[in-house]
Length: 52
Image (cartoon, rainbow, N blue to C red; front, side, top):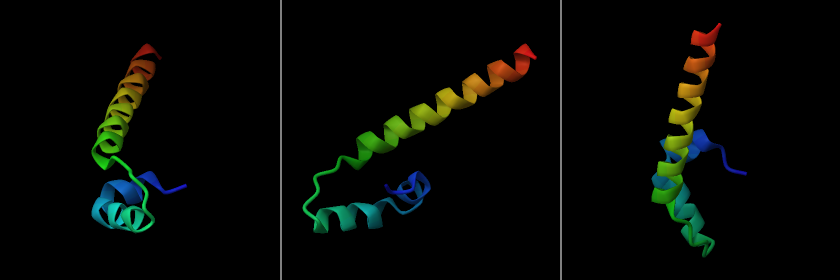
């Protein structure tokens, strides 16, 4: 499994490496989904902290 931080910070390198392996990977979809998940996680954490 590839570290999500590596994908975020070094997207071009990861995409180049995957393309060399003939892996068709939609990096834009991954990055937008991962960003949405991080945003939701932040909102959940804020709601939990405000509840306490």
